Length: 175
Image 1 (cartoon, rainbow, N blue to C red):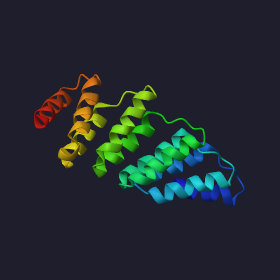
Image 2 (image 1 turned 60 degrees about the vertical axis):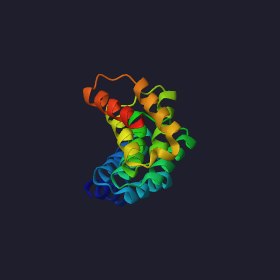
Image 3 (image 1 turned 90 degrees about the horizontal axis):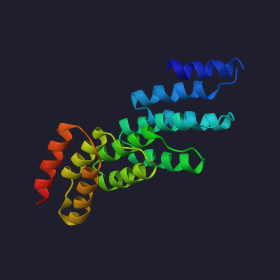
């Protein structure tokens, strides 16, 4: 609330807010899962003539992830690209984590592929989250996709012993 109050105070005193001030407010919303408020701030930024940047979008996506708002997070990713702002590691992380939290392993896999296409390496946390999302789903209907997921995840290098153990367990479940 302090960051938002500061924005309001700046507006009341006719002091133009810059992208950093807006990002602080969106980030504060992100830390508390206030995704609706984060979106409102982005709209306010635009109306004030301040274009959102990668940090703005990533913080808003993080708020959506914390509030389990997968579709909103993915819409922000799409909007971000349409605005000419390239996603970064954190943008992808928030969206993949939101998908994983919702058990949407298909979209998680798509985003992991996009990350690799943009030359980002998914973290072991994201990989584990995708495996967990897949394990919770009824994947018997799409066995080939699940096997592809396993192969994609296995192809990502990681020195994480917990991840290797989880991949081995996952492979045994597919057998």
